[in-house]
Length: 102
Image (cartoon, one colour):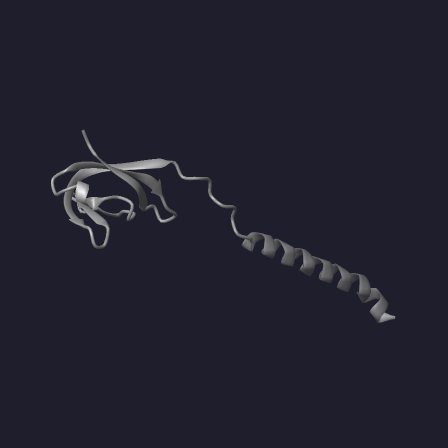
């Protein structure tokens, strides 16, 4: 007869464990994707250009990787430029275009 009295207690414990497992699973679920990033620009004076690695280094020490579609021969050291693109998940500018500043 002792087992009949502990049955409701055991059922409550099992229900509590299942509920806790669902809460833990919900807490570990991945966050929804972030909305599309807003356009971002960086401006400055070119310090160096590395056409082999597709890198533009600015006077302040920042450097930017550019896509192969951008013709780096159009730019030279000392040019004032505007780099446009979007920031990635790590806060780095993903360059989409480069123009000379007027």
